[in-house]
Image 1 (cartoon, chains in turn blue, brown):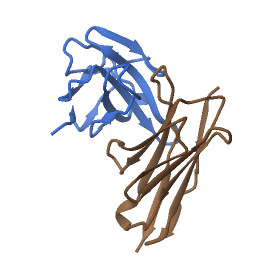
Image 2 (cartoon, rainbow over the protein chains, first blue to last red):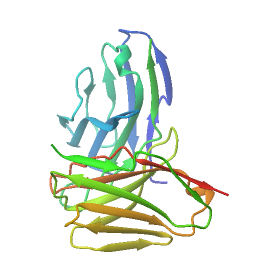
Image 3 (tube, rainbow over the protein chains, first blue to last red):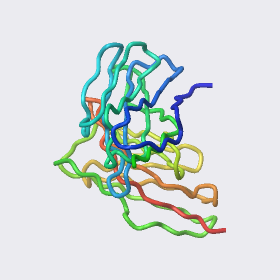
Image 4 (tube, each protein chain N blue to C red):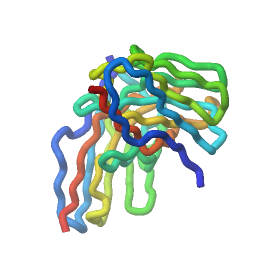
Length: 115
Length: 111
């Protein structure tokens, strides 16, 4: 089954404790991205990756890091989480540029609470 | 700046009726427009895509229109069912592949 998986699905942590949210897709997609979704603000892109070893900032990259060492994985790293990073996070993937519009496949979401 | 507006108020309709959701955009000329469905706490799911040179697109009970003059897309669900209750997101996109996301419209279909 074609899918995007994220782990963990729920996480409660404390300020300053480094964490990683994993994302993996089995569709051989080149393009992957991370979003956060907050009430009244909608989906905002954090980082995206056009392919292995190619990453770039989205609209709200501050406080986040990503890496793309393998095509299927795109982890999101919070080196020093703060309460304003409490949010619902989604990983998404889509096919490469030049292969049509960017129809995105989303993961199930990770609800992060930073105390 | 680019702006996407969807009905901010929730839409409540009776089962069997047609639901119509609106997406307006400003300062933008998208090459295509996508509609997604999102259930509470879950990731958005792609429903339909319509390109700028298409007036209308259908898929089962769903229909999308795209009026580049009005800068508007309408999303219709005919013969609506309680299972259609969800939030529907509009996402215009351009040749740079960046999607601009609307905040979504919450639809409740009452039995």
